[in-house]
Amino acid sequence: MKNYIKISLALAIIVLSTSNCSWEYPIDKDGLLITERAECYVSNFELLDTDHRTVRSRSAIIDTIEQTIDVEVLWGTNLKSLWPQFSLVTDAKLDPKITDYVNFSDLENPKQWTVVSGNRQVRKDYTVIISVQQIP
Image 1 (cartoon, rainbow, N blue to C red):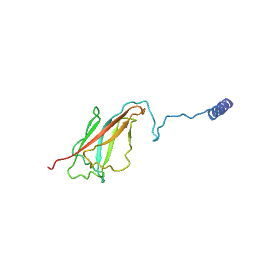
Image 2: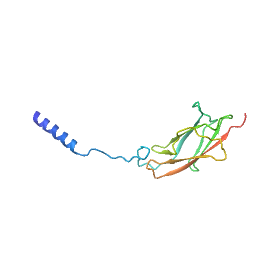
Image 3: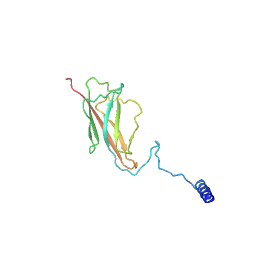
Image 4: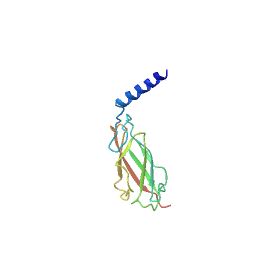
């Protein structure tokens, strides 16, 4: 019986070592897994200052139909150095990636980011519209 177990174990090792055990998962250029998901939307949005504190005066209004994000910031906010944070549907990604603070000071020309679905087939451009809270 012991010989049978040793032979079976030896055969299993040979089979596993000679077979190609590599699975190829599709990966995009950012090293992220490409999935079957076609959903593509922003679920939450935050805007932080250089001290990593929120500058929003109230919750952002996200319109997934019009693909806009309306954000009112506190009076006196330095619009030249803000860090936007997007919460996206599972497996989606943002293009371009946010790697530094963003200058939002030109209120007449809102910033845009593209949300890309997990399967990388659906792309939706979201416009971030900033307004400044009125003086209390």
